[in-house]
Every structure is written in structure tokens, then in C-alpha cells.
Image (cartoon, rainbow, N blue to C red):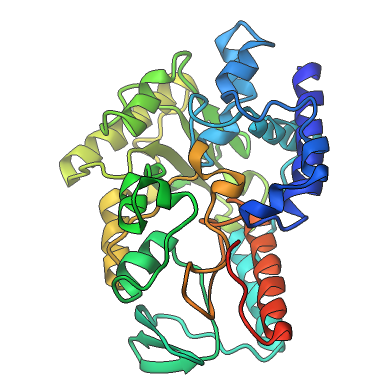
Length: 385
């Protein structure tokens, strides 16, 4: 474990200092002696499973240093070994929880934004973008407004296929290798979706920590059901979160809050009957592996799965479901901050550089702000290269 931790520490230091914080969002930014020096002694090309297998023989020990990427949208068999840095984040730096939950964090961001004069409109789906010579028109539920520049937090696949006019977006440097942007998005592998259970449980759940992982010893079948066969996993790997163990404010005094996340295929057929069967399977699994039968203790229950996400996305005016952030969507392979060939249009968030997760998304916001300021200060627009 120490050897993997040292490797992860080196990867984290190089990744954060040389790549993430440095705002290398274009392929040309990686043509640098700093990048070359940072790569010494770090495995960028092998898969996570191959790299971890060099240190551990027992499958459970391998899972201990691989599980984080399962919930970042990849699998140990298609994610670069560089992501061992996540093991160092967990074991070396720790994981922190905002009191009041993630909504408290969102409320704080909203408060700061409003103090700076930001106007925030909710329940206002965007249905179209029309680039002009000196502005971009945005079609939305409230009508059409014109803006000097537009930063999109929506997935680039949705923006380019559903919001912008046909044939407006230019060829991507990597996408051009497969014949243009239509084929570029068609050739991408969708990231996993998730089956979610949100439960209010009567009584205490002392058997659980804040974070609990239930991992079958052989989890390869689960990954095949996500990335290859698109089916419901028979023996799933899943994550259980009991935030009330840390934050009493998220549940009544005589109850606990419990969330279950099971990664599943993004185009899964989740009819109500199948979802109910899988829900019961997960509860049975908890009873077997944790020793807690929750069937008769559920006071409040909500679930979500692929059909819910599709319905919500369609309600907001979209049809695209997202894109992968696995092997081919790492580092310079991720979409950059500028919409190709569309002046004044930018991207931000978990679908673009530098990556997914709350810290990465916040850095994405900082970095795209730098790009916009450079464009404004330069009196013009800069290409992706």
C-alpha cells in the first residue's frame, strides 16, 4: 500500500501542479518540457488494473485502491493508471463533508454570486443557440435574449448536436480522425448512469459508517454490464452513503438518511417492474453483507434511474445523454473550453477539462474565466490550437 501511495502521491503532485492547476486545456499546451519532466516515473498509458496488479495479488486489495474511479465514470480496465492519484487523495488527504450537505455548498456559491451582481434564473431551459457576428442569441423558456458571450455548463454533445445550428461547429482535432463531429460524438462511449435509492430509515444505522462500499470479489461482470452488454448487474458493486452519521441536521432525531448508488449502463431499459426487482435485490444484498434488513424500516423512499434522467433532460429541451470521461476522455482528449469554430461560445463543468468532481468543476470555472478574459483583453478570439 505504501508503494501505491507513493506512486499516487507523485501522480497527484504532477497532475495537479503540471496539468490541472496549469490550465492546459489545448493539445498544444502539452508540448512542453515541464510536461515531459513531470511524466518521468509515472505510468500514464497502462490501465489502472494493470498498474495495481503489479503491487497486489489479492483482488480485494486491488479493489481498495481502484474503487474511487468506479464512481468517477470508468472501470479499472479502461481507465489510465494515472488515476492511482485518487487513492492518495482518499488515503493521504482525506474526504471532507460540508455540514448541511451539498445543497449548503450550492447555497453558498449562489450567495457569493448574487453579492457580485449575478442574475440567476432557474426553471429556464435553453432550447437553442444562434451565433452572430458580435453576440449569441439564446432561445429559452422566457423568450430570446442576446449575450456578448455564452458559457455552457451542458454536455458538449448536447450543445453541438441539439442547441447550435447544423454544421456550425468546426472539426475537433481528435474528432476529425473519425470523420467529423457527427461521427465524433457517435463514436464516443457514454459514461455510466446510476440507479439511486434515497431512503429515510426509522431508527439508528450504527452498522454503517458515513461511507460504505459493497464490492463483489469479482466485479468484472458488473463492468461488462455497463460498458459491453448494457444490462442490469446480477452481483453489483455499489456505494452506500449515510450522511446523518456525520450531519444530524439531514434527518430527524429518530431516523437516518441513507443513499445507495449503483453504477449502471447509460442506455439501460429500466421499466418500473425491473426497477422494483433491482431495488429489492439491493436491499437483500445489504441485509446479507451488512446484516441490516431495511425492508420494513423505510419511512421515506425515492429512486432514480436512466428513464428519469432522460425524462428530465428532455424536459429541459435536450436529447443527448452525455459522453464518456474514460480513457479517451482524459487530459488533452477532453473537450476544451471553446466551442470549435463558434466565436464567443465556451464550455465549463464536469464534461470538459480538467475533469469531474467538485474541485475539478470549480477549477474549470476559474480556468474558463481566464480564457474569456484573455479573449476580451486581446480584442479578438483565439482558436483551439
